[in-house]
Image 1 (cartoon, rainbow, N blue to C red):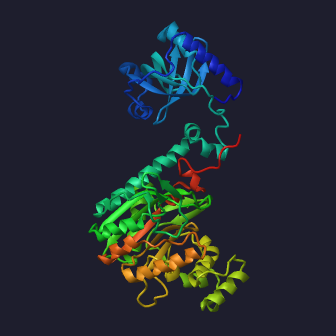
Image 2 (image 1 turned 90 degrees about the vertical axis):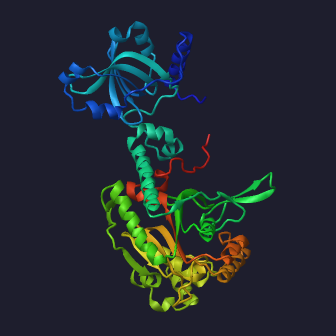
Image 3 (image 1 turned 90 degrees about the horizontal axis):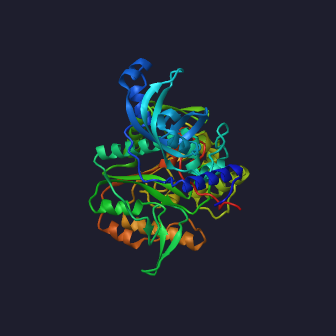
Length: 494
């Protein structure tokens, strides 16, 4: 066990004394009949006289977060999963043996207390102990009270300490859970079936991304952590599950930033007999219902700016956005060479091997995306960057696809699904050719998915929404690592 100074040494000595006395350091269980939140809700409005008349007796437990020693009596604040409460431990009430045991307890220890609730002279609701029991001994001291846990890397790496010391961190993850539950209820109420599809796949598909690779020994075959559940969910649509959704993890072997974590949570859903325009309407409805139910407002304060989610949201075509928002002249969008020349003059790094649509999307990423604060649907994505999307009937160079941008980042990607197996085969072949030219993010040929399409998939639209990025918005979090309990980190040094 790593030593962290004299306080640690003192605690080890206390542990030895407790062992010598035969005191269990980690006993099994303790019956609790009242939480801190329940105590405040039930007795918070009672004055001292009413409490004295009722003398409510309860058993409570939690972690000691503060301790004031007055010799033959001590006040502690203990914290359970719902909040904090004060307790008063007096030698003449708990007895000499129990009080001496209590004297060997420290901030960070878990304690069980049976006693009566009363109010102190300052009016604080307090549990007067009749019995006190050590439930778990903390060998390591918690971070210093007044400065808390502020180092960002330590907070992410030791999330358990972050949750102990920073109550607002727990609030983020409670809200995250409530948000996901609201999303789930939204889709179930509309006839969608929640499913789970494989995390390990023989062929990674459904997104343009570099996968993680592993090997299954018993089958002697390579497998990939999924980059998206899309192709499996659409197989289910072929099988007759016309409304389907999944909330689960994706894995992409990419860089780590305030917007990216290699392991992240996505919502994906598919709806038969719908188009991408139907999905935009449904997305507005989803966000409106979730924000109203979880936060009670449609206007959020995010990183110093107000974002209004009141529908209808702005809808703009990608090329229109490049001209009107990005300042790109129409002449630069007339062909691939003109776009590349404009991009290079604008300082945008290109290899020169990009497809025409890839040049446009790189221009968009640099010149338009950062300025899209309020919810904006961007439509008309080029076909060569949309290998699973249905071609637009009026202009086959673009697809019936949108991306949703809020606060300068992508939140969702949706489109009318490509259900023509021959067109899909040609798109896969183009992706395979890109892989052969060295593009490690290009998609694989999935022959079984093509076979499924050959059995017939109804007209369908589908969408993916980044759960982590949505939580960032709802909690005013600047980094994706603030909304993931255990984000990926470099190995700890030393």
